Length: 111
Image (cartoon, rainbow, N blue to C red):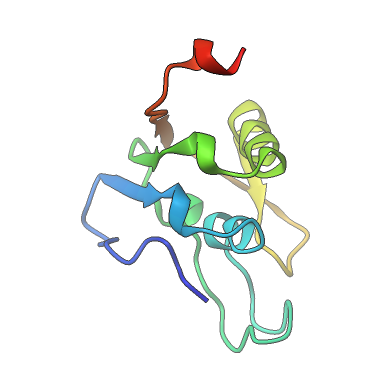
């Protein structure tokens, strides 16, 4: 499974995610994290990029328009509530960072 965020370092304030590199099934797991045993193949806990992002840091989603619309809706919910859940846990976690995005094509072409 591709992580889509191999360039992450714990000391960076901006985390760039190549949206195109994530499939629709990988995306929620990559950004929210999971616990060991949450699904087949989850052999250890994994922190997602919403959890890794330090308070005040920025997650930058390149080519956000390439994400599946269902994933964009889930991301909007995170922005509205400032919370997310780790797969395999029932407790909400608070997201204290910022999310930036890029859409390389003019939006009026899609209206």
